[in-house]
Image (cartoon, rainbow, N blue to C red; front, side, top):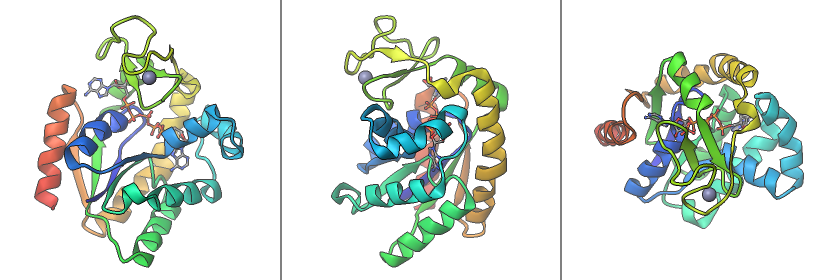
Length: 217
Ligand code: AP5
Ligand code: ZN
């Protein structure tokens, strides 16, 4: 299956992606996690992305599309993948369509996570991520680590992302409405969008998402 996950910052895309990709046996491709891994490894790509990310702006398409395509080219993605955080504007959606067409592939669905803005702000304010691997995600109320400040999965230090500061979050929400929401209409024209509520316990949201994807398949 080839799925795109969309939703505002803090909707729970990364959290759901983890369970959905386990259930569907496909890799989780998060452009945000790829950028953060490049930043922590000090690569040129990481250096190019860092200032944009810290401000909550989109990294330019010239950098992002190539990185996403390289990841989709990897052998583990040959039979499917779940894209989290890509595409994030109409230009990227068009680039993805061109990539898929060139490989004789198509998307099976676009899962749109709906969450009210006040809940998104609460989720982001309490989020803590692991320094060693930003896909290890916790929440000070909803998903407390066993030991405060320490990642349960790898023992790494937990910290608050620079772009999770309140003023950066406001910018990320603006960018989402302006740049990313139009891709939902873009995919609606292809009849690919399923929208679910991402409110409630994590396991319930996963169940809702699996049911919606099964109906699409
Ligand atoms: P990215 O890392 O993709 O950030 P985002 O889209 O803003 O999404 P988040 O990671 O903030 O949230 P999420 O929806 O994954 O929520 P999570 O599961 O963590 O991108 C960061 C930056 O990278 C961008 O701003 C941009 O600069 C750059 N970038 C990335 N992709 C790009 C692209 N394609 N083009 C250009 N630039 C790009 O959950 C949030 C919190 O809520 C967690 O603490 C979690 O534990 C908690 N939570 C989750 N579910 C629930 C629940 N059901 N109930 C209660 N709490 C919950
Ligand atoms: Zn960790």
